[in-house]
Amino acid sequence: MLEQLRQDPLQVLEWTWKDYEPYAAELSAAALSEANIQAWLLDTSRFAEAANDQFNRLYVATTVNTADETAKKRFEQFIDETQPKVLEAQQAWKEKLLASGLQPAGFEIPLRNFKAEADLFRAENLPLLGEEQKLSNEYDRIMGAQTVTWDGKEQTLSALKPVFQSTDRALREKAWRAVAERQLADRAAINDLWGRMLDLRLKIAANAGKEDYRAYKWQSYLRFDYTPADCHNFHKAIEQVVVPAATRIYERRRKALGLDSVRPWDVDVNPHGLPPLRPYQTLDELTAGVSRIFHRVDPQLGEYFDIMRRENLLDLDNRKNKAPGGYCIDFPINRRPFIFTNAVGLHDDVNTLLHEGGHSFHVFETAGIQLTQLLNIGMEIAEVASMSMEMIAMPYLEKQEGGFYNHAEARRAQVEKLEECILFWPYMAIVDAFQHWVYENPVKAADPANCDAAWSELWDRFIPGVDWSGLEAEKATGWHRKPHIFEVPFYYVEYGLAQLGAAQLWRNSLRDPAGAVAAYRRALALGGSKSLPELYQAAGVRLAFDAETLGQAVSLMEEKILAD
View 1 (cartoon, rainbow, N blue to C red):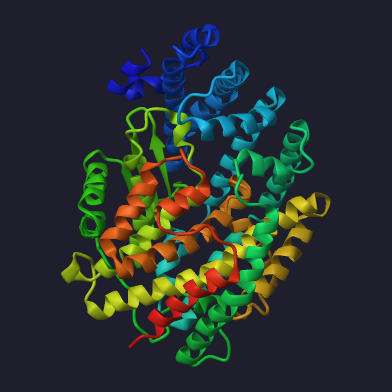
View 2: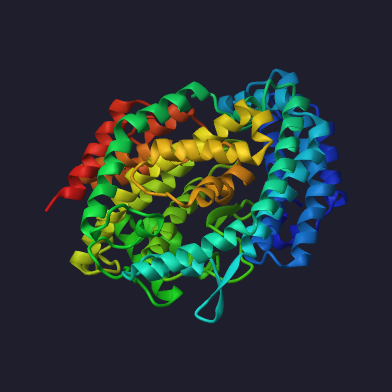
């Protein structure tokens, strides 16, 4: 029956635990042996596919319309009533396999993961994890409801992004301050949410017997290949070699704009007075152009994206009550990805779709892996898949290559992308270092005022090139506007590590485009069957935290930025 769901995966949307229970009972009762272990693993995989598919589809429904009370109710009913029982059953199967002593061929990484998960699992945490998901949804609702009146119309905050690129500085500042005022209006609500969320997380860690929440998350993320100390070393490397390069970018911007200092509303405008890049007018033009680019990168990758277009697996427009940001999620039953973005007509939308397209390729490339246990892909390599695609695709942004722009515009987009990469690492370091501070100092972090102070100190350390004088409240509450801190704690360093992996893969693509893409696809196709360093190696790059590797990447980027 679980296999039959592949014919109509929407059947599972209405399931409750009563529908899952007969399959769970059969799997729990099975006596494991060398003869039946592969079949049993496949059955547990089908069960997981069904439950994960239901969760993902219900989650998507809450994000495409955060005001949909029916979707909210169905999702919360699932995480309150069905998900805890599903997770409890799956944990029992992991323990059953571990107790059997069986070592299925090619299953070394999942067994390692199971041991870590078995050590972490506590039944009393299941309702708390469900409550944490509800608090994440509450954060989405707060952020999704933020609008301002602009030109006499109610606008989402994302819809004002084009104004930040206006050459009219007074208009940029007016828009920036309007957005900041609306964000600060929710300061008390987000601070209240933060207190409840932090308290809940500390309880979860204590229940699991961990010394702190960071240790809990490290194990839950199955981070076997690097430590918090490595992250702190990465922060120092960024401070040493990236912050000076970022400061040089801001200084060139200041001189080009003829300013005394670069203010927050000056960071998005073209410093040479050029209007914002407008790559498309309609979403059809956006998807058609990105399709052509993907086909130039690799015909099979282009076909993957075309499948998503044909099967209505893209939700790209920005609208009121849509959750902020962008993501790619999978529907495991039929092995299809779904991409969610908030496109508003800018070049950022192209980059976002290239990025999320890279995530979607991971789903397609691993479609032949039968066991979901081998699809547990670390975020570090998952983000290499997405960030690499933004960089490898840069040569094809020009119209004659299939993209959107003339030669000068394409060159401008490439320079802006490389500058964005350099400017990103310091911001990533702020977000990651902030989270380390929070969970190293949970008593202090319970007071939002201390969080504001810690964030401000980190901001001044890593982004000295932007002048926030007189905007202390806006700067201090920047952590409010980073969803990862609230929804997926400690999930951000992956972006920095992946950006370094992507930079190495981009370097390889400059020398050998076909070879670099072949290595990229080989790494993706491995799913989670190898260790993180091995997956990086398969992609032709190295997992690194050091200033030397980072410095080589930054030097190449600066060379290309400053080339004639």
